[in-house]
Length: 401
Ligand code: ADP
Image (tube, rainbow, N blue to C red; front, side, top):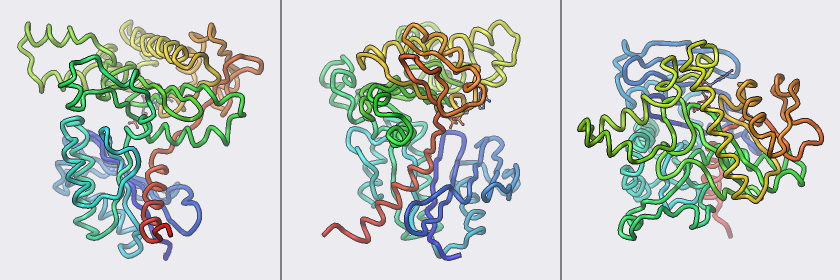
């Protein structure tokens, strides 16, 4: 095989996802290899596919001595390189959760950039270190390979000051305390699809609902972010798998004062024990929540939908109306039931669902004649990262005249 390969790493708090694309001239096309290690650190488990074929299926990595992200990354890269050899690598692209106020576009990672990304760790302490560990792991196994960072925050750089400023005293705002927004890699993919998939009249004022384990909404005007529900951190906004979304800070003050909770226990509570999991007492997985008859599970699903409906209303008023609603990510792409319940709650706004199209997860799921069009568009975060990396490396090789 001779086509150079672009590697993509997406290191999350308990998982590492990776993909590899062949860059044989022109567009990259779909990923040729995909895989992930889940369950880090307790039970790291590797799966790896080549096209549609499973090459590694649920291999337990404890026996290979893996107990952290660095180990999971090392084994993943070894297995992946075993499939395509080391020589033809063109670049590695990384999902980096935080680009701060500084990085508004993907960046080639040299020592200086790496140091600037390290300085942003306090803004995303649970995610940024893993993203950077991915860069270190690649540098170890493929020294000298160009590495590119794509940021979850960059797409939201167009949000105006009135929306991104937090009403804190200046000295705190100057420390970087502002609303950043996340899921930007996914939103930039969806924005790139709007001109291809939506008629012009339907893509001016759009709300995109990225509903996965993490969930947020983005209001786009002409394909640019003007508002989003996540904020300074990925805790704000909607109800999520294990995060409760927007929360009165008074709750935290109460827990600190009355129970003596410290940073670590609050962090664990807010990131891992709330949301669908905490409320339902059943699972963080929407499929299990929807299948459960437990009253708390019903309430969890109901509140998941309620919060989306409430926030879409707010974003529609920011946009001065709504032309289209787009669903994406795990729940948005696969749960016809959640889409139906959200659209029912937004009937007042002019969303009218075509139930059969929704049940089939067609691209267009709204009934003809409704004021607001509704779509399902599968997101492709790894594809965006791979293209960012290939583009930046090509620019480096052929600097503009
Ligand atoms: P991540 O945010 O980790 O990238 P995904 O976007 O893959 O996650 O979304 C994962 C979530 O999607 C799962 O936790 C599960 O709740 C949900 N999900 C996947 N398939 C379905 C389905 N058919 N119905 C409802 N929820 C689903």
